[in-house]
Length: 149
Image (cartoon, rainbow, N blue to C red):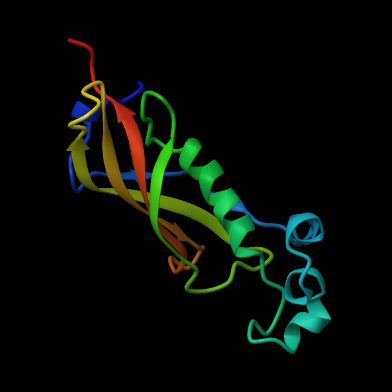
């Protein structure tokens, strides 16, 4: 798919991603490096927490989401460049064996008043597991170029 400019987007458009299978090994590796808490590092210790078992870090989920968005059919011409994040929610944990995908829905298209060469897309990106349940919902504002001329 070709790169898209602000004029190519409209509220209500939905873009899909490929799927990604999460492994226990990568949950553990990410947690060891960036979020070393027992519910991300130790399946037995995690059973005694509110998660009831091993869960990926929310920030690991965010990183996997970013990869899926970049690999999706959502193709802003400059790339996926966030200007401001409105919200981040993790309604349920990501577990080993989950298969994730992302649906990105354009909520609003706003040309910039101060920078006529660009604008903003307000987008809701919902990361879903294999059962179609949301595991992360983010609402970023993406900076997108306008067509020249």
